[in-house]
Image (cartoon, rainbow, N blue to C red; front, side, top):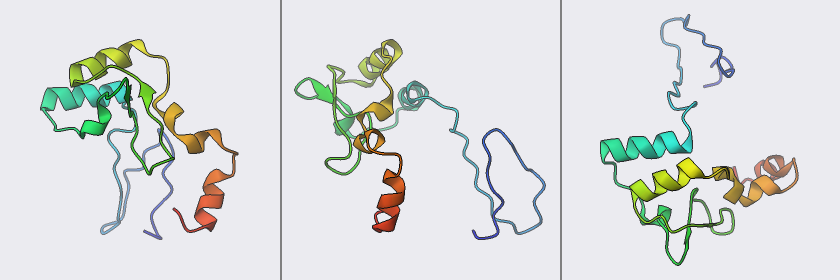
Length: 114
């Protein structure tokens, strides 16, 4: 991993020496809606926490206190897709760390969290 070249968005290097370790991320440009449509099409099982209970559902899962539920009645994959097609709220809006100061990730790394 130490010798791995940097990965810049939308810039692709396909000229690697034999034996080089590379990572490929085919879903980088997919939206949350794209992911749910793929889940529906492929019949992929989904954790029940992603579906609404008591008028709320999680769009992102993480440690307690890091992700917050959204108001929602979507209790099926089709309902989640319809909800996402109509919303303008980002999936990351429920991540509490994103609303903290700019150095939150640096502080987490220093504390050994990441």
